[in-house]
Image (cartoon, rainbow, N blue to C red; front, side, top):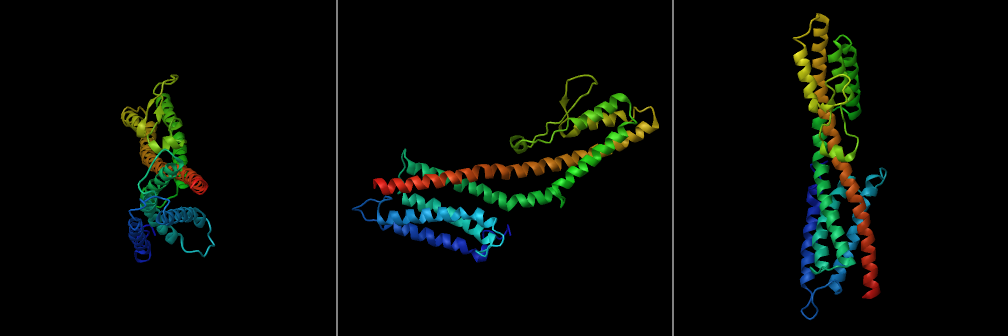
Length: 291
């Protein structure tokens, strides 16, 4: 679906975009020299009405996505139309404004439209690429399953740590307790590992344990220094589990980051779209009242 989005039905909406582009340019240049091009000419009104209609039409994509029983075309078709008709607004609306800008509500509506369209380009990129990234990263396993696996590994490590000397056991437990999987959207977007570890029991100081590297190094050093066979065996198993834990945390963190990109995009795109609709209504009212 994602690969066929832009070439839906043999590039149906790309062809429509090209027709609209040619027709809009021809309409714009049909304005005579006696009356300079502007949004108040007959041609300007046609371009403006077309722009307003497209903006209203494109907002229905979100409604269509949630109307599972709707027979008003496929979601793929609506999304393809959304992309090309939205892109056509860059040309049609600019011609409607006749390249005139100023400090007024009309320019505000135009700027908001640009923000919606260009944020939509990011949404298109995300829509086409992020599902593939998530699928490759997760290897067919759900996020909930990854968290269940992480919890299972942690429980095994804690049970094995009982056989270790006190100092090593406390560091192992500290590494687990101070592992950070960011809960806020901003931290998820950064995708940085803020995990820490307490190296000395009783100390309040925590040092970075990014990518679980410190605890893995400590375990690697502790194994040959073990004085008991049971401890050495437990440490070997713990080291293996922490290596699995390290890979698992990378997968979870990357999944959260990619999903955070999509959340951040929606947080920006939807309110800006609502603001655009409000500015569009004001723009139309001002035109009819004062012109």
